[in-house]
Structures are given as structure tokens and as C-alpha cells.
Amino acid sequence: MAGALVVLEGVEGAGKTTQVARLVARLRAGGRTAQSCREPGGTALGDAVRALLLDPDGDVAPEAEALLFFASRAQLVARVIVPALARGEVVVLDRFFLSSYAYQIAGRGLDRDRIRDANRLAVGGVRPDVTCVLDFPVTDGLARAGRRGATDRLEGAGDAFHARVAAAFAAALTPDWQATHPETGPIVRVEATGAPDEVEGRVARAVAAHVPALGPVLGVAEHAE
Ligand SMILES: Nc1ncnc2c1ncn2[C@@H]1O[C@H](COP(=O)(O)OP(=O)(O)OP(=O)(O)O)[C@@H](O)[C@H]1O
Ligand SMILES: [Mg+2]
Image 1 (tube, helix red, strand yellow):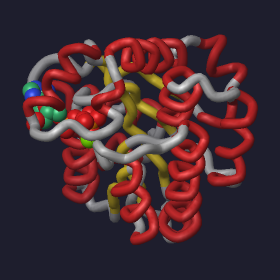
Image 2 (cartoon, protein in one colour):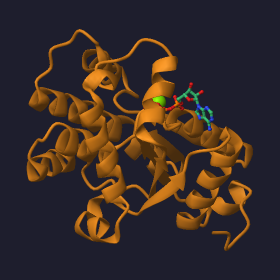
Image 3 (cartoon, protein in one colour):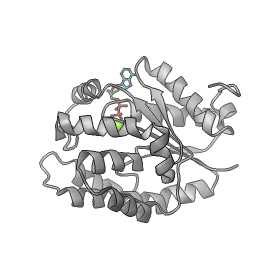
Image 4 (tube, protein in one colour):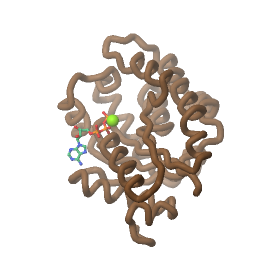
């Protein structure tokens, strides 16, 4: 069986972590070996980096922030993602490099080509089979994330920052953007309003549309969507 790499993206509080867990559970119920990883994190080194990045009191220059994200990603790709795909497993990622483009380029204003080059160093030739952008209103997402507890450094970055991030996710859904960013693989919009069960079904259909081998595993009829 061929491995598959599926990414869920979207603004803060869009439901990524919720749906990553549901997708992995659904893949396992269908008989596939599947695991999830979150970014930053997913390895011991990555989890240490995560703590540095999300500390609400941390002083992190934008360039340092970007390189810390890429350090976590490089470790995750080398130690977890590449070996799992080689074993024919499914890896579901809670954020991947679309988040770097949205947060580091659009959010922080760092140079686009340099961020893309650094990302290439981190990921090598790994390309997602599909990236689902969970489309959810940014202010509602921030409110949801706020209700969950203490605000981390990125959640607290300000409304204008998060509006730029949301606009970048929207831009990534356009054919023009995807034609000029072949390294990201196909990116599809998934409506993320509604009950968790509804969103789960939409994610399953979007994944099956791009990775047909997973259709029966996910209980999605062929040619759906
Ligand atoms: N479809 C839904 N309907 C109602 N509440 C939801 C739904 N999906 C997720 N939630 C709740 O909204 C909050 C944010 O969801 P979740 O943590 O999955 O989002 P996230 O995109 O991973 O957020 P972050 O960007 O902060 O990691 C959680 O408290 C979760 O239980
Ligand atoms: Mg999350």
C-alpha cells in the first residue's frame, strides 16, 4: 500500500486539531495504519521548539521564529514523516508549510523567496497528497481558541496579523497561486462551519477525492464530490 500525506490547515480555532483526530480515527477504523503530527512539534526536538515558540512572554524575532518552525519541521520530516510514508502509512498533519507561508510571509512580512527556500531545505522533496484548508471566520476562530484557555504568543499577535493570515489561506485556494507554488501539492477548501460530524464528512470526501485509495477506507463512495 502506498503511504499518503494529508494536511489540515486554517486559521486559529478553525477545528484543525479536532478534525485531525477524527480523520486518523476514521482511517484506523477502516484498517489503515495512520498517525497524526502537529506543527510545531511531533518529535522531542520539535516539542522543545514548540514551547519556545508559543511562550506568551517569549521575545522571538520574526527571522528566529521562522527558523525555529523550520527546525521543528526538518526533524519531523526526517524522523517521522519520511519513514512512515516509506512503510506505507498515512500521516495526517495538523498544519504544515502552508502555515509558514501564511504566518511568516503574510503575517510577519518576511521575504517570500527566502521562506520558500528555507522550507525546501526542511522538507526536501516531501509534498502533501492534499491540503484541506478548513474555512472558518477568523474572528470566530480566535474567540473559540480564546475560550479554550490561556492565549499563546501567536494567538495574541493581533487582529490585523490574523486578518493577513486568513487572507493568505484564502489566496492559496486560487488556481493561480497553486500554479506558482507546485511544492504545496493540491489545496482544497473545506467548509468548517457546522457540527464536528458534518465537517468530518466534508474532510473525508475531500481527502478521498485526492487520494482515491482512501475512499473505501474512509467510507466515502467513489466519485463522491
Ligand atoms: N465543528 C465544531 N463545532 C463546534 N465547536 C468546535 C467544532 N470544531 C472544533 N470545535 C471546538 O472549537 C475549539 C477549537 O477547535 P480546535 O482546537 O480543533 O481548532 P484548531 O484549528 O486546532 O485551533 P488552533 O489553531 O488554536 O490549534 C475547540 O474547543 C473545539 O472543541
Ligand atoms: Mg490546534
